[in-house]
Image (cartoon, rainbow, N blue to C red):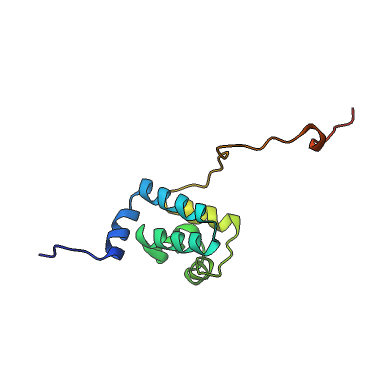
Length: 112
């Protein structure tokens, strides 16, 4: 009986959980490096059914998914949303801890 597992096996098991995967992707986004987020998205996709399943569920070609989620990938918003949705996740936007307020001089004036 196997008593240990590799880091990759452990991460695949953990990333199968939507809550863990969401936290993992949030941390990747906070890194600020697009390649880190794309790698994280690829790992989540692989853990949550693989690229073939993701291709079926998103309607995107498997080869296109591999390119999109590669280090140099540049996914469209529609692709990103489809990938996250098929993985049981969604993209959200939240305010930062210290939101910046626009000064009155920077506000757009509307003519009556």
